[in-house]
Image (tube, rainbow, N blue to C red; front, side, top):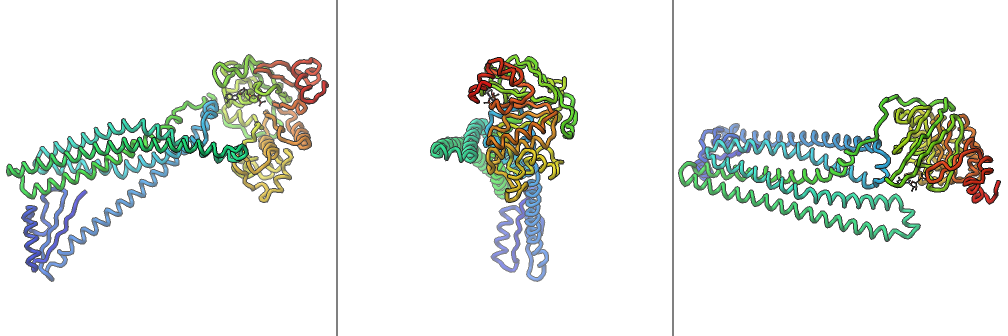
Amino acid sequence: MFRYIAFSWNVADEAQANAAKRLQLALDIDERWNSVLQAPGHCVYMSGSRPGVNDAYRLLPAAIYVIALISGRLAADVRTLLASKVEQRLSANLHQRFFAHLQRLPMAYLVNQRGGELLHSVELAAASARSISSHLTTSIAPVLIELALMTVILAQLDEPRLVALFVATAVLYLAVFVRGIQRQLPAIAALSTASLEVQAQLNDGIAHAETLRCFGAADQAQTSLQSALSLLVQRWTGFHRLAAQNALAASMVLALTLMASFAITIDAVAKGSMTVGGFVLASVYMLQTVRPLESMGISARELSRALGFMQPVLKILAEPPETQASAQTPAPVACSSPCNPPPIRFENLHFCYVPGRPVIQSLDLDIPAGRTTAIVGRSGSGKSSLARLLMRLYRPQAGRILVDGRPIEAFAMAELRAMVALVPQDAGLLHATVAGNIALGVPAATRQDVETAATRAQIHQAIAALPMGYDSMLGERGQTLSGGERQRLAIARALLRRPSIYVLDEPTSMLDSKTEDAVLRSLRALTAGCTTLFIAHRLSTVMHADQIVVLEDGRVRERGRHDELLARQGLYAQLWRQQTGRSE
Ligand SMILES: Nc1ncnc2c1ncn2[C@@H]1O[C@H](COP(=O)(O)OP(=O)(O)OP(=O)(O)O)[C@@H](O)[C@H]1O
């Protein structure tokens, strides 16, 4: 803010002394050492000394200059350090908040989102939050202070027209930028949509590289990416065009201001109300206003861009999360199996993912405690949807589900999920170690617990044969394992939880018949005494179930034991004949 002009000369040198005299006259400066304060805020140090007499005085301005320089540098470094700390915190908090929010969003919302898009949107938002923080702390706040001081300094020049001009410029400049931001925001929103599309396509290409290669669709994906990139370039160009128009308007405001200030000061000098020195100072000050106003403009532009890029994440954060149970009971510790298996009751249940397309209709069903109930039916009949409703991944539009006589909404989410273990169709493995995947959600599990669960799921030997055993890393979604191995890991994961309810959604569909037999036997023994919902296509895998429920179009079509259903000669018997070629 404060400008130090250190000027020293050797009075023995006539040419230097004359030059100093001329400058002193021009600037209207008192000759005494360290004397000049023609304008508050500007210290002009002038020192005249004879060699050998005033050496210390001659060095003083230089010393002050060096100290000021170092202090300024230090202050800037400290400010950068503090600002970067704030920025990193902000970014980490945003990531955490976003992740926590995603975990609480309804599945119905999440399944329609693309992973790559979500990832990119949070990255964009974090970068934007850092940019906003940086501009606020290192640019906008200092510039505002600078502008306020500049106004005070100008007020001291005894030329009210200059103050009015300065204030008018600041207001006009602000108006130009507000208008600019208003025009740029839609362009930034379009830009960020295009950018998210590019990221989502890149992500899809990486996640499904195998599928794209197998289907010879790599070129098709490349072409699609190319058009997404072209759109992105086009939208960036549109945005920069608007930004340039805005910058041009702002420059015009500044140019007009400078012209007006020259006119005012020349007029003041001509009328004798201002000295030549005052004219020089006033001109210098008005030129000085350009820099902070310009940097304010740059910051405003960056802020508008950052705000635009934050919109997708702000939109997701505004999505209402799933309602939690009113009674927040703590999650129970996994029990030693089998423990108090509860009965389950589906009562007049109606559910659809998309309005008007019911998936479960008027479904009434009792699942007895400690027994195995098989849910069978043609593909799309609603079997997995029933499991998802029980896990409270979705909410039914009507009806209710009771566990142990209590509606599932009355359970704290953690309590319900600790009670139920799911083996889904897709194993859902993470890019973590084998042990970490088996012990998912049970951080207190010991290596012994993990190995026991793996042995029961018939996967221990395969894990032991891996180079790092239980510490081997699985690729993303367990890509380094075969389908059958993934499925057995998912079974081990469920067994480790020792739940009172098992939901097994086609847990052996990817196993060869020998392994399937072994795993089924093992599962039967392990789930004995637990309430088990066994969803299956292959009826041979559930023929021993205590109860078999046949679903059709989301309704219970038949119910009974294997023999009873065969004897009924209904849909079950038909499916059995289709699968086995036998009538019994
Ligand atoms: N997230 C979703 N959004 C919209 N519709 C869905 C969604 N998930 C499933 N569906 C539809 O709901 C219906 C029932 O699906 P569900 O997965 O419950 O069937 P299923 O009996 O388990 O089938 P399968 O035996 O093939 O696994 C299907 O028509 C399916 O297309």
